Image 1 (tube, one colour):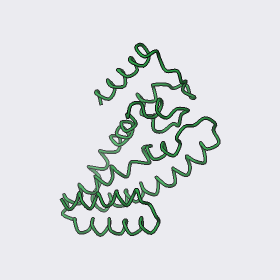
Image 2 (cartoon, one colour):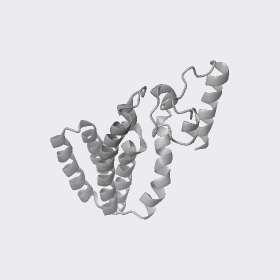
Image 3 (cartoon, rainbow, N blue to C red):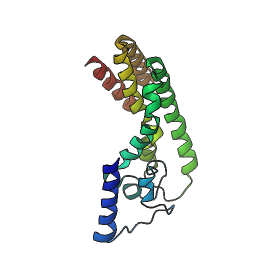
Image 4 (tube, helix red, strand yellow):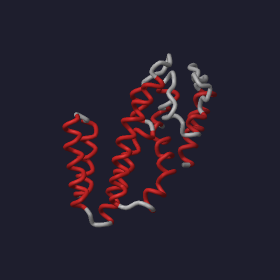
Length: 178
């Protein structure tokens, strides 16, 4: 994480002292602290590119949140539990996305709310859990089980029209096949 914080620090110095500062004020007054506290993908803002995706750093907040859960996923989990957690993460993604839309849709001046919902920790946590699930499937020699599970998800996503998730599960199948 030190390189991330160093990158944020350098960007702040460049923005404030070299390039003349940020001309767009954060509507919550948090400013650059949202990057240091990993809140940049949790709180919407009035300018997505400045306050949520500073030079592509939106992903780092998600990694920080995953690192909080990683010890549980890797030590206390097995393949079956990882499958259940993946299902819970997918459901949480949908439910929390709807909750975000309800809570933040009436607030004026929010930029790219749909993008932020997809980039938030609950929006991408299932990607991390997919990796954990693949790890446990290979470790426990359950490649057939994961293929059946993923094919079931694939059928569900095709029926429901979730095209982004279809590509995710195809990627898992390829990863496990390797």
